[in-house]
Length: 285
Image (tube, rainbow, N blue to C red; front, side):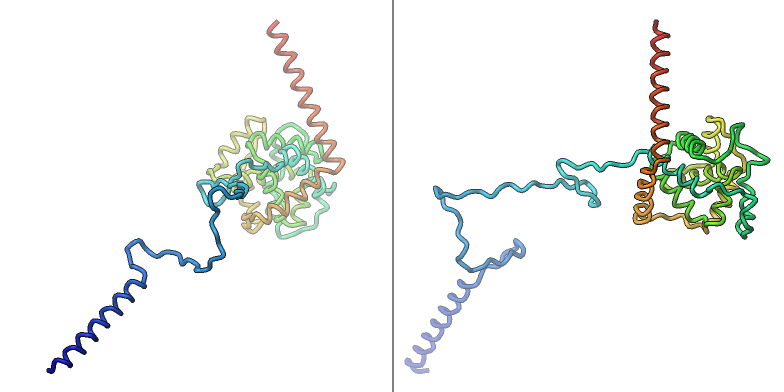
């Protein structure tokens, strides 16, 4: 190879090496830090310099997330006004009287489900010596006693109305009569209690709790089986169903009959508390 040929090969190699170095310096270096966000090349964003009249943005109120992802708790949570148990009990008493509407059990026409109703009758096996007539005051007293014995919350009372609606119109008219409504309400509230709470509730515990309030019920398992057949074992309740029942019950609370029941119950409580205070003062003296 001639001398001129060797010179031009060396020059081409030097130019190739120089171009490759420039390309390597212009490309970003690859590291093991992981992928990064792409930055914009626009120059419209300027950081504030020291000494300039720059005002910080007002602080945004932060939200505290709970341990579970189902709820988000604020710094000052707003409490919603929940209906009291007395309001729901008064509404349920008015609803029961509306269901019965003075219908006699002998006037109810025969239905296939009427064969299941004989287990709710009190003609041969009454609960206690008190009257089983259905009116506003007796209904409120009885279901309030059941709520105290079973320690029910307001949601169970709404659940009881859902179960009663699923019984059916003709069977419900037969249940809300003089000799049927009390045992029917025991079965409905016991079923609502078993379905609402996560704890396993046994019928033996329900019977023992009622015996402490002078209510002696027998064949509770047969009553529960008959009630489940009447509602076709439809025992589920969605949040939408609960909301569709709780708000009409709160509107029933505003009726004059319900307001009268609530006022009478509050007057009894105040009278009972005053007598207890007088009795405690007399015993101390």
